[in-house]
Length: 281
Image (cartoon, one colour):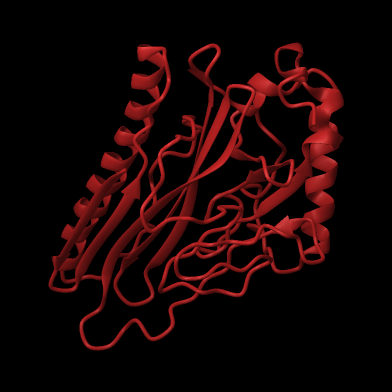
């Protein structure tokens, strides 16, 4: 476990992330750790760079999160994570206890049980965090969500606050095929030449219709159909796969992560041969 922590005046950085071990193939091991480490450094650098905007006479006018939107996948580790024992179906931090389809607490111990809809969303709001000097915080946590048949999945969640009313949340999934020693995308697992895109698109559109809390962009920037590089993560405990969109991806909400749940079993007919046994649960 690696831990980055600093507290300078009103600026706080808290990052806890796993260092993967116990894998025989050195190249695979190096690739996994590099993926996670590079992502952490990129997020931390962009956060620190954004702080320069605060010294200007005008407040930050543009949305902050310009980081990775594509799937960088890496595995879950056999090591544990300090301060992060959560289930990352949805994630919030200690200053971010929003009312969501699923609820989490300040230490990120989420319950992934669906409570009436198939769409899980993270909806957060600032509660009593702006008193006197506006807070500037970055908190990132990682959680292992899947480790079976040489497939590993780590989920990361973050929250960035750049002053009053400038809170951003997001997630990043790292999935890895240890047999091949490579990251995997949704297009690597499922046959997009089959009816898979139609089935998933129909389901997501239905979930969007049923869940009135998700307001899509008015133009064509909203949900336009599933892609091979769509964000996803595997949940071993519940036998599910979750397809998610970060804040501002398909909705103007900065504190909402539209997340769509599918059971691995229901999507098993669309698995490519390579993963038909590994993920056919």
